[in-house]
Length: 350
Ligand code: ADP
Ligand code: MG
Image (cartoon, rainbow, N blue to C red; front, top):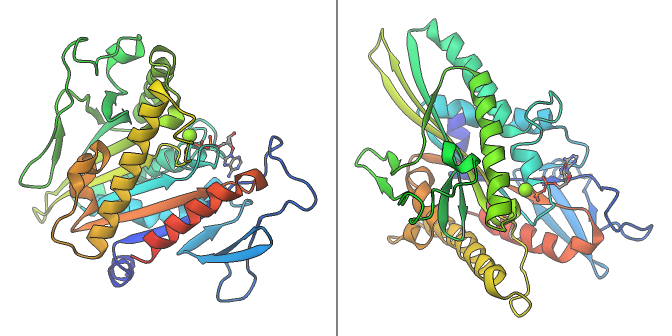
């Protein structure tokens, strides 16, 4: 039933999540810029943003208010995670400016029952379901990879050499190119990328630790902030049923995108400017791809960025995409929030 609903609606859905106000936010009594409509038809789906006294209304497939817990959010995507076990290619993105709650939504605190985000929860569910499907004759092979894309360069977050400060993604440091190739079956291969077979959640949990360490090494060695790179978590699932000989190949991609904020081009120079250009390029490539797919255009510009090329088989055709647009309620972010909501509204119309 779930799959039929998705097919009726198109392959892409948009959920909006507004984070709570934090103590650093610049609120004052008059400063409330985000509100939620209470009419029955817009409840849970509408969001209003007030800028310069003007109220703008947006509607999405779902809107999570600041009080929504990590569990509340996961409940709404658990079917999508399930469809990866059924053999679908799934992408879940978090889009929004830095500080809007993308990493909280996707990763959260993996070791905290309440605060863990979608990635740890999805993996827990996948392993639980795998267990119960074994009784119906299914056996699954699961493989995990984690990478980040920074300035159009892939970094392998599970490469042991990365966590010790050695940057394997630089050709002069081992010559790893991380070349992306797609085979005729729609499977993606990234040369030299570490792919780990996983059998239980605790194994994956250790990998999160390794990836986090590797990301923080990248931060200091390459003068890079995690908010400036895309984080791509991939779970490949292949299942075979010994009774029916049925086979499935599913992929679950969970992506924490680089911050979408528009840095003033005139103000940024050198490395910062290069970063900004790379982020703008890949985020606009992602939207170009989404819009081209929605319009069923003959040419879909997958090759315009590493991110879209990497995800090509998981974005078109028989795949399912969900985009979270994360929004800050901070009045000083109202301009960026409006940009994010407008972008998300265009995606939602696909
Ligand atoms: P981003 O990844 O978009 O830059 P973060 O996920 O790091 O943003 O969130 C910024 C800050 O807000 C962090 O301190 C995070 O813990 C907090 N935060 C974000 N979303 C929530 C939420 N739903 N509930 C509580 N705290 C949140
Ligand atoms: Mg983040």
